[in-house]
Structure formats: C-alpha cells, structure tokens
Length: 161
Image (tube, rainbow, N blue to C red; front, side, top):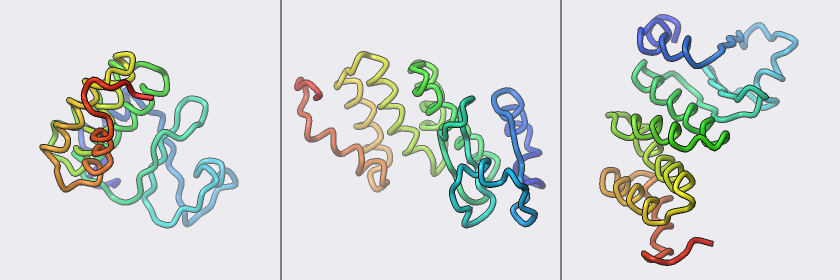
C-alpha cells in the first residue's frame, strides 16, 4: 500500500480532505493496538477500519487494494458515515460515484445508493426499487444483487413496513 496505493494523487487527496489516518505496525504491537483495531482480531494486513468521530466503526476492509479500488472503498465508507448522520443526499452522491465506476465495489455501492435514496425520500419504495433494479440489471450475478432481490417481496405501490 505504501509504494503504490497511498502515494496515488487521488488516494492522497481523498485521505487528506476527509480522513484522519492512523497506521499501526501489527508486528510491533503498541499498547493502544486493541482499541485502534476495535477490539477485533486482525487476521491479515492491511486492515482498514473506518470510524466516525466517536470511534464507531463505519466500515472494515481487509487486504491490499489498488488505488482506484481504495478510492471506491473510501467513498463507500464516507457514504455510510453520511447515512449515520442522516445526510442522505451526500451519501447518495458518494455511492452513485462508486456505482458508476468500473470497480468490483460498484454492486455494493449500488445497493447502498438505493438505501440512501430510500431514506432520503421519506421511505419511497419506488426510488429504492429503481436503484435496486438498476443494480440487478448491471450486476446480476453479484451478492449485492441477490440481497436487493428482497424488493420482489414488495410489489410496486405497497407500503414498506
């Protein structure tokens, strides 16, 4: 990560503008390691744990990522953070940016774009359906498309419980 991903200008700009980084060497355990790792076992490195200002975990990603995929991963983390603060329009912007990218993370972002749109529009099922139908058309074999298939349990025009 230190030779390819972190030095990338897009990664560096996103990190500097939106995150406070903490790097811990797992081979030389610092006394604060458990707290920084969120109390969980770290089975492999690198481990990226994105938290909000209060230390609540928003996202956890394990393993090396290319610069483009790391930017997408960070944008998903940002979108999840925006959802937790009820800033659905900002979350939707982050998710849609990733959903439109050529990235293995695009299906996940498409799923969360539907969630952000749904919540931001006072639980509009048609908006959720539009996003998830697009996800299922664009990534029909993804695990996220299978998760979005729950929308079939809610025919158009029926209220969501």
